[in-house]
Amino acid sequence: MRTSGLGNLGRRWVLSLGVIAFAPPSPLPAQSAQPFSIQSSGALVFPSESEPGFESDTRFGFDVQARYTHSRWSVGVGYQRSTVFRSSSADVSAALSLFFLEPRFVVAADRNVGAYLAGRVGLGKLVCNPDRCGQPNYATFGGGGGLLVRLSRALAVDVGAQFFTVTDDANTGYFLARVGLGLGL
Image 1 (tube, rainbow, N blue to C red):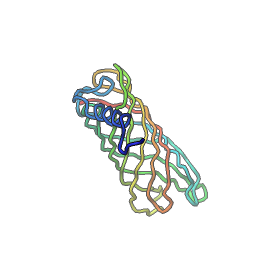
Image 2 (cartoon, helix red, strand yellow; image 1 turned 180 degrees about the vertical axis):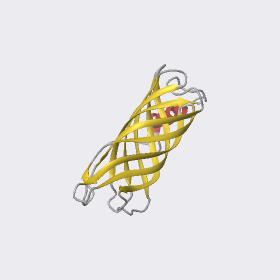
Image 3 (cartoon, helix red, strand yellow; image 1 turned 90 degrees about the horizontal axis):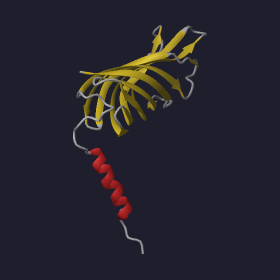
Image 4 (cartoon, rainbow, N blue to C red; image 1 turned 45 degrees about the horizontal axis):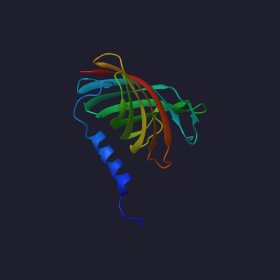
């Protein structure tokens, strides 16, 4: 006879996740030992679909962010810009420009390496050079993961990847791969 609810196995999973999520507020070894940090990353962004009148033109872009870390959780606020399209016929390039909020949760860590899951929400648009796009700002959202490699008490390398969507008329999706350096303050 089957009972409703979570059952023993389900209760164990919920309890385990609760213990992990609300672990004591000490920094994990792979994260910065300081609660505040700044991070800068080089990024490649690949569009999952083409824009009408443009060809894909992935180039090296960047993101910068300020982060607050508490135990396994951290949250970053930042800016990202990456060229993603160009039109050879009109001599125009288009860059994805967005401001974002990025919560992170470290799922596993040892002394020098930590694996994390991240989400990202923001507001952004395509910015053309020269200014021919005239697009409004759109909401962006997505998620991914990565590895933090601790180099010293205040310095860590961040290698990560994400998929995110811009809620424009086409709901364009983008794959992002980045390598960055975080400095604890």
